[in-house]
Length: 215
Image (cartoon, rainbow, N blue to C red; front, side, top):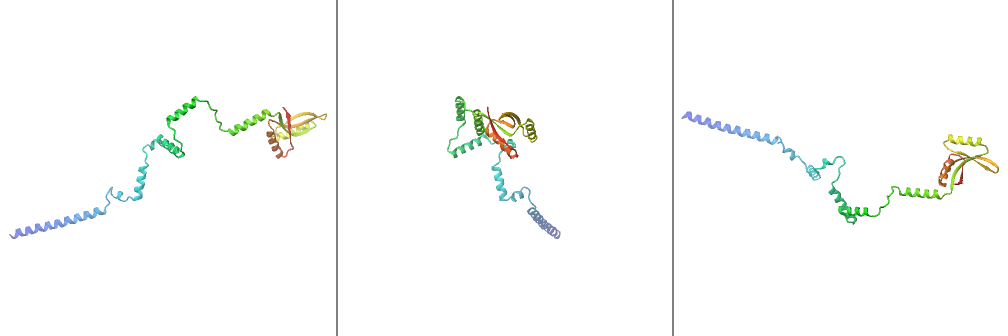
Protein backbone atom coordinates (compact mmCIF):
# COMPACT_ATOMS: atom_id res chain seq x y z
CA UNK A 1 0.00 0.00 0.00
CA UNK A 2 2.76 2.37 0.80
CA UNK A 3 4.41 1.59 -2.55
CA UNK A 4 1.19 2.30 -4.45
CA UNK A 5 0.80 5.63 -2.66
CA UNK A 6 4.33 6.64 -3.65
CA UNK A 7 3.68 5.64 -7.28
CA UNK A 8 0.39 7.59 -7.38
CA UNK A 9 2.03 10.65 -5.86
CA UNK A 10 4.85 10.50 -8.43
CA UNK A 11 2.32 10.26 -11.29
CA UNK A 12 0.35 13.30 -10.10
CA UNK A 13 3.55 15.26 -9.59
CA UNK A 14 4.71 14.38 -13.12
CA UNK A 15 1.34 15.40 -14.55
CA UNK A 16 1.49 18.75 -12.77
CA UNK A 17 5.05 19.34 -13.98
CA UNK A 18 4.01 18.47 -17.56
CA UNK A 19 1.09 20.89 -17.42
CA UNK A 20 3.32 23.68 -16.14
CA UNK A 21 5.93 23.01 -18.83
CA UNK A 22 3.21 22.97 -21.51
CA UNK A 23 1.75 26.28 -20.34
CA UNK A 24 5.21 27.83 -20.31
CA UNK A 25 5.86 26.62 -23.87
CA UNK A 26 2.47 27.93 -25.05
CA UNK A 27 3.17 31.28 -23.43
CA UNK A 28 6.60 31.48 -25.10
CA UNK A 29 5.07 30.67 -28.52
CA UNK A 30 2.37 33.32 -28.02
CA UNK A 31 4.94 35.97 -27.12
CA UNK A 32 7.09 35.04 -30.15
CA UNK A 33 4.11 35.19 -32.53
CA UNK A 34 3.01 38.63 -31.29
CA UNK A 35 6.49 40.12 -31.71
CA UNK A 36 7.43 38.57 -35.08
CA UNK A 37 5.76 40.30 -38.16
CA UNK A 38 3.33 38.08 -39.98
CA UNK A 39 3.88 37.87 -43.80
CA UNK A 40 1.27 39.55 -46.07
CA UNK A 41 -0.31 41.26 -43.03
CA UNK A 42 2.11 44.00 -42.00
CA UNK A 43 2.31 45.40 -45.51
CA UNK A 44 -1.41 46.00 -45.66
CA UNK A 45 -1.46 47.38 -42.14
CA UNK A 46 1.40 49.85 -42.83
CA UNK A 47 -0.39 51.51 -45.80
CA UNK A 48 -1.41 55.12 -45.19
CA UNK A 49 -4.58 56.95 -46.27
CA UNK A 50 -2.66 58.92 -48.94
CA UNK A 51 -1.35 55.72 -50.49
CA UNK A 52 -4.86 54.27 -50.61
CA UNK A 53 -6.16 57.42 -52.35
CA UNK A 54 -3.30 57.38 -54.89
CA UNK A 55 -3.97 53.71 -55.66
CA UNK A 56 -7.71 54.38 -56.10
CA UNK A 57 -7.01 57.28 -58.49
CA UNK A 58 -4.55 55.16 -60.49
CA UNK A 59 -7.12 52.40 -60.86
CA UNK A 60 -9.79 54.92 -61.87
CA UNK A 61 -7.70 56.46 -64.70
CA UNK A 62 -6.23 53.17 -65.88
CA UNK A 63 -6.70 52.51 -69.58
CA UNK A 64 -6.27 48.87 -70.72
CA UNK A 65 -5.51 50.04 -74.31
CA UNK A 66 -2.70 52.42 -73.28
CA UNK A 67 0.14 50.08 -74.51
CA UNK A 68 -1.47 50.05 -78.00
CA UNK A 69 -1.27 53.81 -78.45
CA UNK A 70 2.53 54.02 -78.78
CA UNK A 71 4.51 57.23 -78.23
CA UNK A 72 1.80 59.46 -79.73
CA UNK A 73 -1.47 58.16 -78.32
CA UNK A 74 -4.53 58.70 -80.50
CA UNK A 75 -7.74 59.39 -78.71
CA UNK A 76 -10.62 57.07 -79.55
CA UNK A 77 -13.21 58.26 -82.03
CA UNK A 78 -15.86 58.27 -79.32
CA UNK A 79 -13.95 60.77 -77.20
CA UNK A 80 -13.31 62.99 -80.27
CA UNK A 81 -17.03 62.92 -81.11
CA UNK A 82 -17.88 63.76 -77.50
CA UNK A 83 -15.44 66.69 -77.55
CA UNK A 84 -16.99 68.00 -80.79
CA UNK A 85 -20.47 67.68 -79.34
CA UNK A 86 -19.48 69.56 -76.18
CA UNK A 87 -17.83 72.34 -78.22
CA UNK A 88 -20.96 72.66 -80.35
CA UNK A 89 -23.11 72.82 -77.23
CA UNK A 90 -20.99 75.65 -75.79
CA UNK A 91 -21.12 77.66 -79.02
CA UNK A 92 -24.87 77.11 -79.40
CA UNK A 93 -24.56 75.46 -82.83
CA UNK A 94 -25.79 71.88 -83.37
CA UNK A 95 -23.10 69.32 -84.03
CA UNK A 96 -23.16 67.79 -87.49
CA UNK A 97 -23.49 64.06 -87.77
CA UNK A 98 -21.51 61.92 -90.15
CA UNK A 99 -24.55 61.57 -92.45
CA UNK A 100 -25.01 65.36 -92.70
CA UNK A 101 -21.28 65.77 -93.38
CA UNK A 102 -21.51 63.29 -96.23
CA UNK A 103 -24.55 65.14 -97.60
CA UNK A 104 -22.66 68.46 -97.48
CA UNK A 105 -19.72 66.87 -99.29
CA UNK A 106 -22.01 65.57 -102.03
CA UNK A 107 -23.74 68.94 -102.37
CA UNK A 108 -20.39 70.68 -102.64
CA UNK A 109 -19.22 68.28 -105.33
CA UNK A 110 -22.36 68.90 -107.41
CA UNK A 111 -22.21 72.70 -107.02
CA UNK A 112 -19.86 75.19 -108.58
CA UNK A 113 -16.13 74.70 -108.13
CA UNK A 114 -14.76 77.37 -105.82
CA UNK A 115 -11.39 78.93 -106.64
CA UNK A 116 -8.46 77.74 -104.57
CA UNK A 117 -7.67 79.93 -101.60
CA UNK A 118 -4.11 81.21 -101.64
CA UNK A 119 -1.91 80.84 -98.57
CA UNK A 120 -0.67 84.44 -99.02
CA UNK A 121 -3.57 86.62 -100.22
CA UNK A 122 -1.79 89.88 -99.39
CA UNK A 123 1.26 88.84 -101.38
CA UNK A 124 -0.94 87.87 -104.33
CA UNK A 125 -2.68 91.25 -104.18
CA UNK A 126 0.64 93.12 -104.10
CA UNK A 127 1.95 91.12 -107.05
CA UNK A 128 -1.26 91.74 -108.97
CA UNK A 129 -1.00 95.49 -108.36
CA UNK A 130 2.67 95.43 -109.33
CA UNK A 131 1.87 93.59 -112.56
CA UNK A 132 -0.93 96.03 -113.35
CA UNK A 133 1.34 98.99 -112.64
CA UNK A 134 4.08 97.51 -114.82
CA UNK A 135 1.69 97.03 -117.73
CA UNK A 136 0.39 100.60 -117.39
CA UNK A 137 3.83 102.20 -116.82
CA UNK A 138 5.08 103.69 -120.13
CA UNK A 139 8.63 104.30 -118.88
CA UNK A 140 11.74 102.40 -117.85
CA UNK A 141 13.91 103.80 -115.04
CA UNK A 142 17.69 104.01 -114.59
CA UNK A 143 19.98 105.24 -111.84
CA UNK A 144 22.76 107.32 -113.37
CA UNK A 145 26.14 107.48 -111.61
CA UNK A 146 27.88 109.98 -113.90
CA UNK A 147 28.12 111.44 -117.42
CA UNK A 148 31.55 111.88 -119.09
CA UNK A 149 32.92 113.53 -122.22
CA UNK A 150 35.21 110.63 -123.09
CA UNK A 151 34.65 106.89 -123.19
CA UNK A 152 37.86 106.35 -121.18
CA UNK A 153 36.55 108.36 -118.22
CA UNK A 154 33.25 106.51 -118.33
CA UNK A 155 35.03 103.15 -118.47
CA UNK A 156 37.18 104.08 -115.47
CA UNK A 157 34.09 104.91 -113.44
CA UNK A 158 32.38 101.67 -114.51
CA UNK A 159 35.45 99.64 -113.45
CA UNK A 160 35.53 101.31 -110.00
CA UNK A 161 31.86 100.55 -109.47
CA UNK A 162 32.34 96.96 -110.60
CA UNK A 163 35.06 96.47 -107.99
CA UNK A 164 32.51 97.64 -105.38
CA UNK A 165 29.99 95.06 -106.59
CA UNK A 166 27.85 97.53 -108.57
CA UNK A 167 27.13 96.44 -112.13
CA UNK A 168 26.66 99.34 -114.57
CA UNK A 169 26.47 99.96 -118.30
CA UNK A 170 27.79 102.77 -120.51
CA UNK A 171 25.41 104.43 -122.96
CA UNK A 172 26.11 107.16 -125.52
CA UNK A 173 23.95 110.14 -126.35
CA UNK A 174 24.48 113.36 -128.28
CA UNK A 175 23.77 116.39 -126.14
CA UNK A 176 24.18 120.00 -127.29
CA UNK A 177 26.17 118.85 -130.29
CA UNK A 178 28.51 116.71 -128.20
CA UNK A 179 28.59 112.98 -127.43
CA UNK A 180 28.10 112.17 -123.72
CA UNK A 181 29.01 108.81 -122.17
CA UNK A 182 26.67 107.95 -119.29
CA UNK A 183 27.28 105.33 -116.60
CA UNK A 184 23.97 103.84 -115.44
CA UNK A 185 22.53 100.87 -113.58
CA UNK A 186 19.19 99.36 -114.54
CA UNK A 187 16.76 99.30 -116.21
CA UNK A 188 14.05 99.04 -113.53
CA UNK A 189 10.43 98.31 -114.35
CA UNK A 190 8.97 100.61 -111.69
CA UNK A 191 9.93 103.93 -110.20
CA UNK A 192 9.74 102.48 -106.68
CA UNK A 193 12.35 99.83 -107.50
CA UNK A 194 14.65 102.43 -109.05
CA UNK A 195 14.31 104.71 -106.01
CA UNK A 196 15.21 101.87 -103.66
CA UNK A 197 18.42 101.21 -105.57
CA UNK A 198 19.18 104.93 -105.72
CA UNK A 199 18.86 105.19 -101.93
CA UNK A 200 21.33 102.32 -101.46
CA UNK A 201 23.87 104.00 -103.74
CA UNK A 202 23.38 107.37 -102.04
CA UNK A 203 24.07 105.77 -98.64
CA UNK A 204 27.28 104.34 -100.10
CA UNK A 205 28.47 107.92 -100.75
CA UNK A 206 27.86 107.99 -104.53
CA UNK A 207 26.29 110.83 -106.49
CA UNK A 208 23.27 109.52 -108.37
CA UNK A 209 20.28 110.74 -110.32
CA UNK A 210 17.03 109.06 -111.33
CA UNK A 211 16.42 108.89 -115.09
CA UNK A 212 13.34 107.70 -116.93
CA UNK A 213 13.24 106.58 -120.57
CA UNK A 214 10.28 106.02 -122.85
CA UNK A 215 9.67 102.33 -123.54
